[in-house]
Length: 596
Image 1: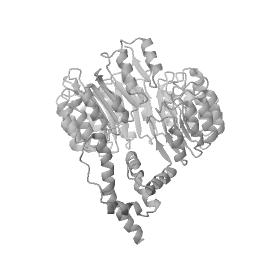
Image 2: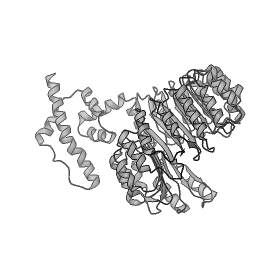
Image 3: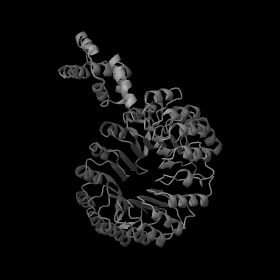
Image 4: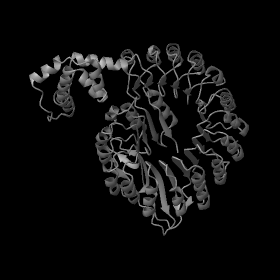
């Protein structure tokens, strides 16, 4: 024991001296600076090289390091290389999404991690169907995400034969067909969750029989080759034969009240209704009143229902409801309707944790509504917008009182203006949030007219993960006015939305410092920008809202710079369909150009 402790002390000292030197030397080489700490003395280095540490101690030390640092440490000596190899063999979870992984690299990953149970390879679009076949060697695999890859039936069947323990699979936006899924269901009987959005399936009737243990209803709504009636029949048959926990019935336009009643026999925890225009308020209310385990409910674009209908439906939900989303943005709600809605929430669901009320921007709410919502002590997320009727109210003080009522609120997405036409200054709202909830994780601010005035407040929100800033059209700002502040103070950001902000070359370095960023939305993109440095990030999406200043050649150049790095979106009305198709076919990137 004494020897182990002595050797551990040597290792810790080295990690502070020699490894720091080793690590920073590599970083300084990349940055071109010379501020590295001095190298360790030969005596210290010799002691470290000869230290006889147990693999268990070394493996645990690797757990405290990031991936790049693990690789640097593993190259120091033979003992550490052995520890790194042993650690890989013990790894059960690996996320390589959007990593640019190739067919040559994947076999090495499989060989080094034989005990993987969970593997994410979404957006690895350089992997071919032939290359993905090697995944069939991961015999202990239980969860796989291959969305947005080149996966076809051949490799899917290889995985079905080699990975009999699969439980959760995501094959959305791949090239698999019904043939491959039938084999998958025959070989892998334990699958509980199957995602196949935007696939190439031609029929779905086999799902209830081939996948007997589903707890999540597969969503075939975006598979346009399957008739809507067949999708509905599949959903109902699955509900009748399975104990579903989650049901997404989005865009099943032919589903009826009688069909929905089939789901009442399942222990449903999550239900989503979207554009189901044949459903009635009475039918929905009767069905959800029998779903006694319901925790999550989403009512989206059910245009046949009135706001009062929606309130009555919610009143019928079980007391287990914790998360509610109502999406009725095409219709303005009146103040009495919103007040009745909020009173229903407080009366029937005092333990509600999240509210998403997405209604028309002209909706009116009274100050009493804010007071009513303040009774939901368990609320963690609030999203609401509208016009506060009384221009006499001190909205800043009301918001401060509201945050005091919500001790657990960590997500705020609210846009409120005053009845006299004035707009609540976003910096005042931000000041209230910073003073009352500095640990907020998600923040949305609209009507921003002076970007510089809010940066000092945002710099104090170090826990932010999602940030939505909507600048007014006349405000238009440069990335350098906000991005350096975010890069320095909000290092955990994963989703960034900056409307009416233009990205220039000098802004790229700030974005590259956001190591956890997954999605970037910006207003405009300067045509001279080189986006290739962003390949160091694992972006799932890069969205340019207004690209009218870009030609087809510009967009193609950006695609070549960011190829194999997730989805690229461009709003551009000047490109022809032929130009769009040519760019989409040439690169392993999905480009959604919206023609206005």
